[in-house]
Length: 115
Image 1 (cartoon, helix red, strand yellow):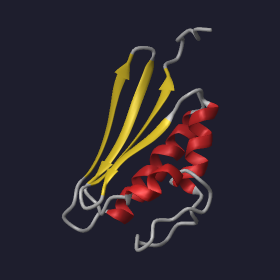
Image 2 (image 1 turned 60 degrees about the vertical axis):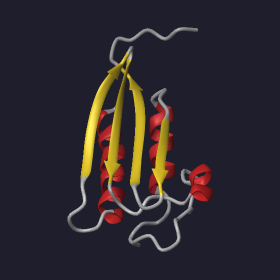
Image 3 (image 1 turned 180 degrees about the horizontal axis):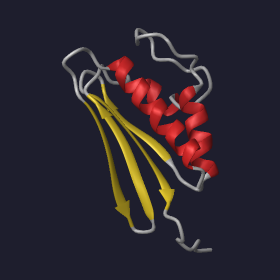
């Protein structure tokens, strides 16, 4: 695993959460072992993502309308490619008005790949 690239993914998810979460809101970063993987999640209490955007949120240049600006629409695409390049997965759960949770997994060092 390339730690600097995983840090880049976490940084991107936290930056997005900061943009989406109003003053007084909460952002939580957590990690948990899941078998031979670690799952890292970033949860915010921001505006959430409309359901029709969830299937496309990791595509290049997709930005949620009325979301705070500042990004290029590439951060989640790059994050997905980094995570998948490390053999992991990235997903989002979100509900408008209740915030979002982005979770990605990476294999633990020394974990054996099962064919």
